[in-house]
Length: 613
Ligand code: F6R
Image 1 (cartoon, helix red, strand yellow):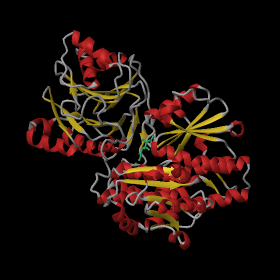
Image 2 (tube, protein in one colour; image 1 turned 90 degrees about the vertical axis):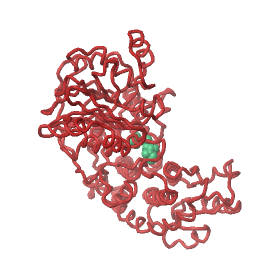
Image 3 (tube, protein in one colour; image 1 turned 90 degrees about the horizontal axis):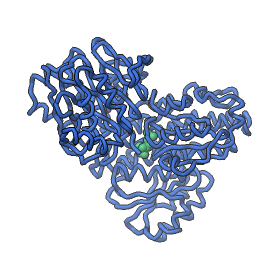
Image 4 (spheres, protein in one colour; image 1 turned 45 degrees about the vertical axis):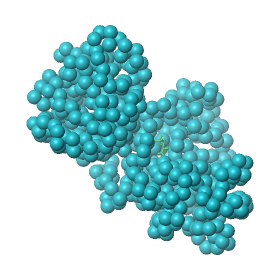
């Protein structure tokens, strides 16, 4: 949510900042801005809309000297919280004197009270944002010690922030700080690049420091000095980013989403690699750091997650209960801390989050830790807050996900949860033979996904038939019910078609009233237990004239005859069925959105990584 990038070094900052913003645009894209520090002046350029609009504005309207010669600057791409997406509300914001400029990701919760105090002292504001209040606050403390001024200002702030601050008369430093919003410092040679995630940094260096909550750092061309807000020095490790710049490029695909759908076989191979014990028929997940005693004492699994990650968690309920006899509840993270969650020492809470930064999931993690539960994170982004705060967990290793609609993270999450269920299952009830069978099945999933991807053109053709509908339903039973929810979510978020996922039998308890010729139903009809019952529900839909598109197992001609259109998927076990079906539904949504001319990678109103409540 909101992207921040900052540069300080020997090169011209502007290009580096704009290219960095383009890499971060998936975090928010309703306005963008840059501040360049040159010749004791802060030159600020902002535009409503995408980074391309800002780039054009800089080219045409901004002083060439600053653009070419400034060697330090900060930049921001916004996802609006306080105030409309306008040029005035775009970051960077300045203080009253114009000496200080800052960019901010997060929310200053007490901004209204702070604004009143500052107004009494003579500040006048030009935007509706909480961020401008912070800029004024820093300015009010600043004389010649920018680090001290930022620290003092942040002590007065309630809420979350990742910030980067410049002062016109201090060109050799940039101050950054974080609390609740990620910030990474890239350590180049004779230059430093800071950003809200590494994708804006890897083009320049793979050596990074992940700042931690409460850190404030002075960044210069030669590195970072990191302190607490009380100015005690802290030591943070330098880490190496595992992937290279190609991972955050489209590599010939029209959209990141399509690239990420097609990456799933290789991404999942990375997720699985080294994690299956093919002698004992179990999974090796050392990051969970569970002793045999922990494994034995856990009575219940509680998944906390949002959106697509919650759907992956819902799939896992069937896996843990089916394979490990382990009672599992799946909680919407946004509700968790507001409903007296009954978790304690016997519970294993697993936070599922691609970004590892989702505010509601993080809050559920903190609540669970506080209540004494064992808590693990299942994240894709290395070094993310949830991964660090849980201190135990499993990385997806799916590579960076740039498309706002989550695709490969979902399938990787389900695979990891399946491996976890296998591990618990082997300790509780599964025989070695059963474990070996499941691990063989897991290994085959990437190849099964390849087979679904071979259907791409056929799916694109079917998409033409359904692209202009206004409403759609997705139905499934058992382990395919969360897959139906995920199919509906994918369609609505990128194509703006109103879509609902339902447990197949639930449809007749109300929603069936909406069915008509123009309202298709996508039915998950993989050849696994429950299919015959879903076919009964399909008949009910067709009797109301709703066209039915079936996700059907190859060779299952009888099922194919019961629906209007078919997307074929390979034969598989019940455990793999939600994964391969969702891949087919990802492609269906992608093609429908493409035909409708939607902005697939950056759907309206959305942003990757939701770091606000
Ligand atoms: C949907 C989507 C969102 C995220 C949700 C949680 O395509 O991307 O629903 O799944 O915001 O995000 P993470 O997994 O980063 O916690």
